Image (cartoon, rainbow, N blue to C red; front, side, top):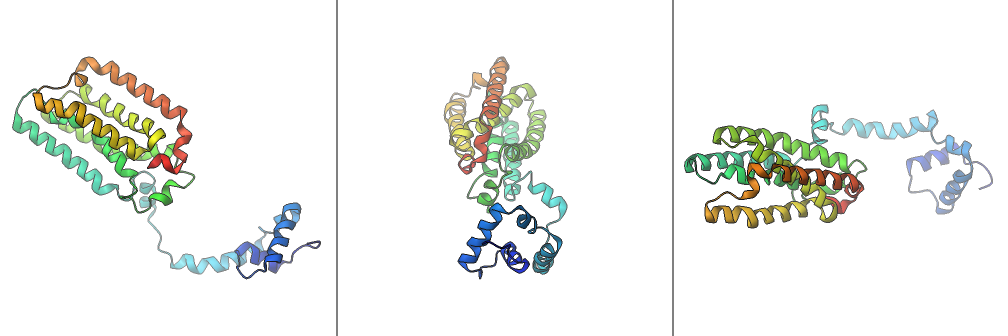
Length: 258
């Protein structure tokens, strides 16, 4: 195209009209690659008004989400409500079991504390539970910031619930808080390699087999949840954060959220 395209053709090109002939479309795109003035003509007021005139009627008919709800969906998965409620119910059930068992050697609250937020994080990224999974996971903002926001939303519900459960059952905060945080961060760190949901399932299964099952079988709390292991859990938490920082770009790939 040796001459500059007219306003009508540029307007049709800007709107993405399908009826532009292939040779015209190719000529316009080739011309725009080398002509800065014509590229600037794509944004002037007349063309913008023409595009807006087509879009405005559709926007008026589109239901708008309330602002508060839009902000909330930036932190919590649309399908997370029932699962967060379920986590609180599990916590309440653990308190009831501890109360029924009395002051024994095994605390159900202490056993579930490390893996409880992990289940919420897994639910936040589950393909089967979130109808907008692929849409959200593939957006540019679906990297580490979104992962941290959703994880923080889960912890904001789970940690206060466990704190109340600890007060009711006499479980010291220092015995469950660090394992809870370390397990959650460890899930995200492993998630950079195999995906968050897969990491959550693998770590939860490992905890159930290696810790929960022997504790219940022998009616004796595992040594990994003693007060003396606090430095170990702190080290795991620090290593997990380091791995996440080093591999933060992995969360921008769709596979990392599976």
